[in-house]
Image (cartoon, rainbow, N blue to C red; front, side, top):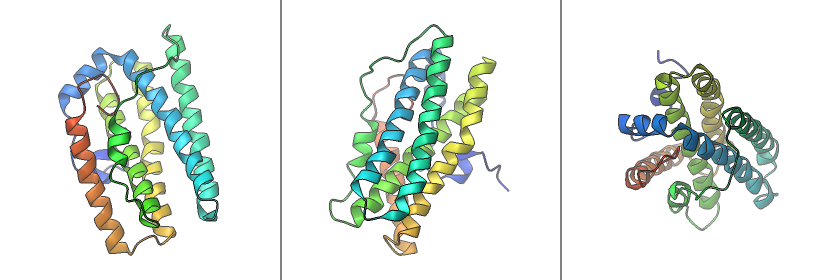
Length: 202
């Protein structure tokens, strides 16, 4: 049986991160940490935006509220680490990854909500996979410990988004699985076309 924290084995990713990304990330680890902090902040914002966008969906409220709080706790953890390294959280030009991934979202409901939840799930899945690659490769104990410590929550967030889509019955089970596969394939294409910059999702 696969290790439950082996993100490449348990999540529905359609591609595996190349070793060249890991090498570049380690070479520019402070930029990766800054981008990581922005990703955690954006993840919290996305969860909260879904609460505001869908007040008629009570099943979303508490799970997404808890998820947003956890993402903000991770944001604070990464910002604190940046400060220990003599850096500050600052503005950063955003990666095109999320916007390009979300371009696959269909405009009509309930497909819009289904696709949004599954896109959020894939972002969490890719984050988990890349954090695992970093945890395996980093030689600085504090950095490796940070990324090992986040793996379980990133994997759980992937499953929480998929389970929300399932619980809300936004599609039949075969349709949900097929759409998840389509979005995973789209995510892999988006990643392959991303610029070679030190970002979590480039």
